[in-house]
Length: 107
Image (cartoon, rainbow, N blue to C red; front, side, top):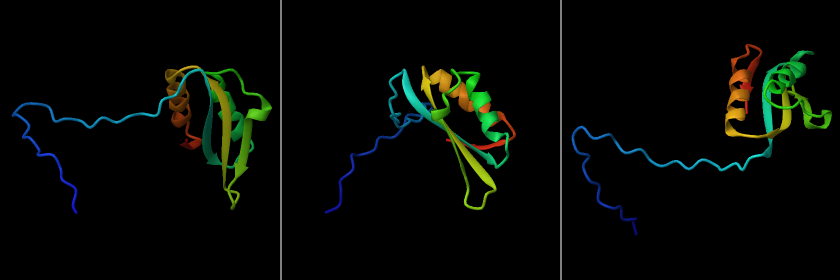
């Protein structure tokens, strides 16, 4: 049996179109949060990522930083786990990372 949909109502002229509610995952701050940046495999890429993130958060301990080369050795991903204090802090980190020409992807 097909699902029945509620009848749709026309949107009055000039009224803004309704936007669906999107629930964002809830982060409770402070929390430990992993940040991953990817770029060309270069001896200085890991230090670059640590330096950018350290502008907004305490410098991570060595155990909280890891790097992994791609199977072909052309790319490297650097993962840092920080103590995030706010969404604004995370947004600033992501903005700075994505703005740098050496960083090609941030997760």
